[in-house]
Structure formats: structure tokens, C-alpha cells
Image (cartoon, rainbow, N blue to C red; front, side):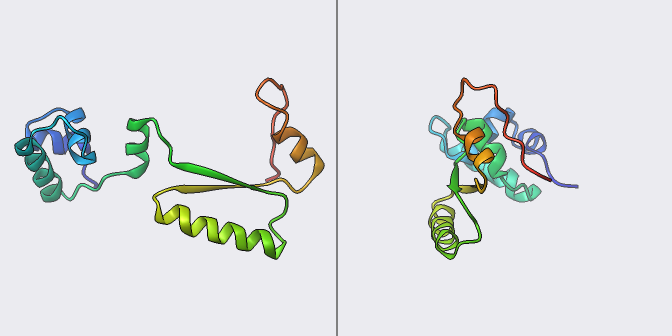
Length: 121
């Protein structure tokens, strides 16, 4: 069973939000509290979830790369290079292929459109 943030908070004697802020390095947490939280997390084997941290900050750190075709070598090279750079900088890459006129029309219809992008399964 994996350790939860609740268990870390209980062990450190602080709130869940304090654990979150201490482990993310947010200012406003005393050095003593931050150390106590870090020690509790380490002792319990708690690992920070990048996805959960992103929810807490409201920043997904996700970049969409939109290409017309995945099968063309040029686009594959661009995607690979972009993926390496973005990954190194802590971003996730969301890949979108718009290989048909219908997909392009739906994608670029704009936020006011009632069109829905449906990808084949």
C-alpha cells in the first residue's frame, strides 16, 4: 500500500495543505516545519505525485504539439526534438494529429463552436 499525504501530515503533526506546500517548496513554511515534513515523507516512503502537484498549482505544464501528419519524417523529427526539450524542462507533451479535413475543421472551429472533436478508437 502506498503512503498518502494524509499519513505524512499525521506523522509530521501538520495539515495536509502544509505537507503539500512544504514538499513543493512554497514560501511561508518555517525551516523546522519543512524539515519535519520532509523527514516524515522520507520515513514513510512518500513520493510526490507530479500530477497532484500540478492540480494544486493550477498549472498543468502540458504543451500540445499539433501536426498534420505523424507519418511524415519531418514532423516526427520535430515532435521528437520538441519532446526532448519539453521533457527536460518538466513539461508533458500532448500530441494531436489533424490528418483529415474533418479533424482540422473541428479542431480549429473555435471555442464558440458546437462542433465536437471525436477521434476514432
